[in-house]
Image (cartoon, rainbow, N blue to C red; front, side, top):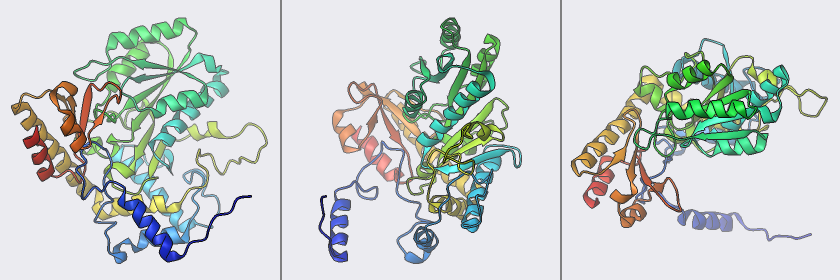
Length: 403
């Protein structure tokens, strides 16, 4: 057996600080290409008093395993679980238009876990209710969809079809969707899962759900719709009053969110939301240690994650969050206007805070200096700028002057 040396508290502190010093800093480095930022300063500032509720929750270490909208799972951590339930209610009902008490959900580790959980549920539904084979189930998604959907395909053993999009609008081409559905049916596919994007990671593009579901309906196939709103879920509902990718749309079964992006909460604060009744398909069919009290993918998880989201939601209220989001979107609009004046080609969804610039319109020096992110690391076609909280007008101005 190997042994490692014990370090003093002072040595541990020095080592950790040395490690942190090698990381990028949102307040010091010029970082414009990522969908992450520093923690929200209103809730998580450097003064201990304001941080106390969150830090205290970490020290108390509440275990929030399970889905509390279904089963509170005892009263050991009843108090903090009530805060998680409040977060789920606010996001499912007030943000995403769900009917009161008609959605289940839990705080997940992030959008990846939430996306996998959605597809896991639908796969099980098709198998248990209709006797489907894995070979008869298929996932459909835009080519701009997050890579977590491909993880889900691999883990669940079901095929995936990536749909071509228009290079300028980033929308799925209707005839492509029609052809791919017909081809899938010919190849024995009977059950479809469509993953709709509310803000793709690279472009901030939003899928036309009405067009997509009308084509599925016309094809007369059985399908379920999951909305990946990991990036856009805390933006798009505030900026577009006619958002169709919500629980107000009966075609939408589930939604994934990430609070550690636009809400600026600590990492590990994603969210999975789904209509009532679907979690039934995660219950084990055989006797096992896996119990009905925990139907989640992650199992044990820190209640501090739920508390972090609750604190931010309460610190702003809906009007405050809308104002915060609109400021970022307005800065994005200004960036787009200035790029247009320079004759630079870009893509931007007007309701989102991502601007993707074509590779031929930007220099390698700018990309490296401002830490922009490409659509493809080997042969990039686009580079994105994300106007997160730390990307202020001064930083954007510097970027534009360098262009």
